[in-house]
Every structure is written in structure tokens, then in C-alpha cells.
Image (tube, rainbow, N blue to C red; front, side, top):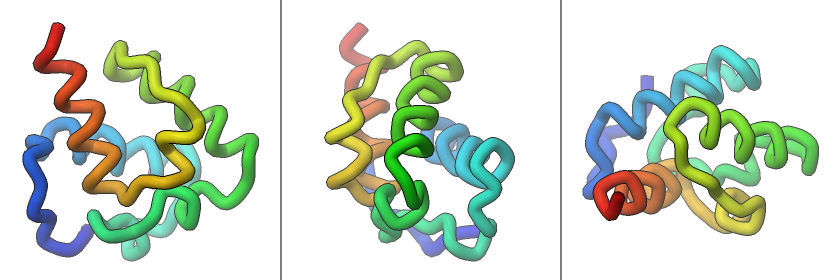
Length: 87
């Protein structure tokens, strides 16, 4: 589904976010890879807001829209994972 990802984020967080991208946002699975920019996958502001809400609902972590705009999928997953383990 995606390139080999070298990140500290465990597959479960990366998989959860990838699944949201494919199933909720209808991003083609071949585009969902660790090096992809979230802003390229979520093509408009509404999608970015909806993803922030979806991550909160799915993983219980609040994320800022600006985090999504500037991160790769792997980097975003690592950031979310770091907050999950800090609880």
C-alpha cells in the first residue's frame, strides 16, 4: 500500500491514519505512502479540518491543522504516536 516507512511511529498509528485517508477521504491507496505530504493527500482546507477531527475521534489525539499542512504522512504519524505514548 505504501513505501517502506522509516519512522518511529508504529504500524498501528500509521495504518490507522492511512486507513482514514483511503476510506474516509478516498485518497487512492497507491498515493498513501510515508513520504507523501499530508497537504498533497488532503487537497483542500475542509479535508484538512475533517482529518484533524477524524484523528481526534479515532485515536483520541487533538491535532492542529497546521501540523497536517506541513508534515509527511510518516512524520505526522510519528507526532501522533509520540503524544499517545506521553499520556
